[in-house]
Image 1 (cartoon, rainbow, N blue to C red):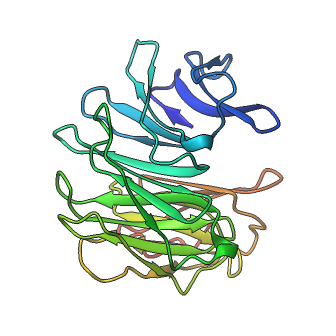
Image 2 (cartoon, rainbow, N blue to C red):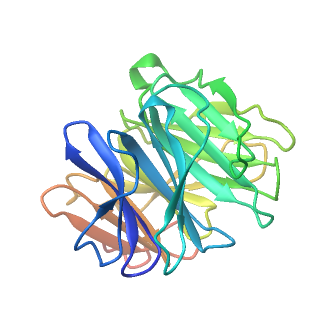
Length: 276
């Protein structure tokens, strides 16, 4: 979900089998109103900062759906549909807005295609399409993509892709180019969710095999970042479906009411108290 304040927010709600629309609330979730068109199916949404309104959401869905939602305080919110790069099942999208208003968007479909635009704010976005060749067909269902962008305009982008099978892949675009490079992380390999930190330059994951959190430091350099394990492990956590990071606190939620959090050091490299 995405939130503008304590009362209002946006979420994908499944009202029937394979019917997932975009809904908005202004009363802390007591009631929800459909924003998207009836019958549209959305798969993911990602909230990002907006220089004019404070917050926006980019949402991705079936039949090539990619939309931006403006969340402005004390307004009814609005949805802007982007021209679709392909009539595909869009599984996830990430967005970032530069100080000048240019919106960078990356998206992935269920056939290992990676989509990119540096002008997502335009009435007609210019998309480039690239195959993620390092992802095997067995892992091609992309679950989530997160990244950071350095400098305004068509500059460096570095990020991580999570597949439904729990594997992680790094991607990077150098400045002035629309071509991305992709590489696989050696570990971890049983991840269910990834999350960005407050500054958007570190990605955190939780691996179910060794029950450890991992930190990926995104940089503008040419080297592929490593996923570094954060000690200690949390052996009590049986599942890890979703994660969140705020003010150096990493929170992991799982099945059957499982909810754990840990305070990391400033570098995000360890848990000084040793306690989850």
